[in-house]
Length: 250
Image 1 (spheres, one colour):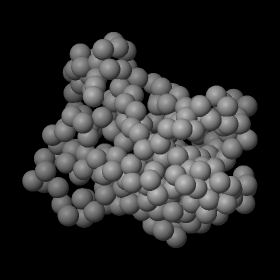
Image 2 (cartoon, rainbow, N blue to C red):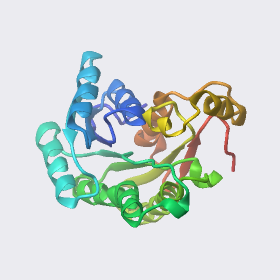
Image 3 (cartoon, rainbow, N blue to C red):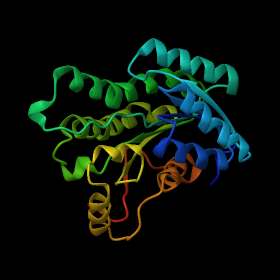
């Protein structure tokens, strides 16, 4: 894919799971990657592994729900890698409980990380992209927005907000040469799935829903992100791509 090599990419939630797969794919295509996570140790491990594979990656910590933390992180990326060309908003928290048991502070925390964090990160990288007249923002949404999963009201609400955020921001920054798209993953066997008590039964149920009878790999999401970040997608913006093995169709 053209247009990724040499670009600086920030991947939030990059300390594992889907974020790690995204970092690997972007670095494999020549991007200079910042793996950003609330857990600096996890981010550092991902960065070290990417570098062992021949890519360029640094690990940084940030609380994406805090503006000053985000701005410091973007400043460090600019200092160490030279600006910001690609932003992958991926950081999220994924609690499971009946909606009548969701406390107000949990609701606020989920929306702050999963939605407000996307806004803060986009605002922080925007000056770099605007100056270049080129930028790619890729937001990680979720198939749960289409399916309406019980037990995840705060999470699903945040993911639905991301779709609206993607569409509106695309209109605002399009004239500046910046595209904004979303990738909507299905179910992937990451640590987030540990909230489901019956792992074997859950795995069987997921495969039954999908057209493709294998579990997804984090790199599958990374490939979709890389496409949106490439020049091949330069005329695509405001869109959401489902990556879930043919589970949800629309």
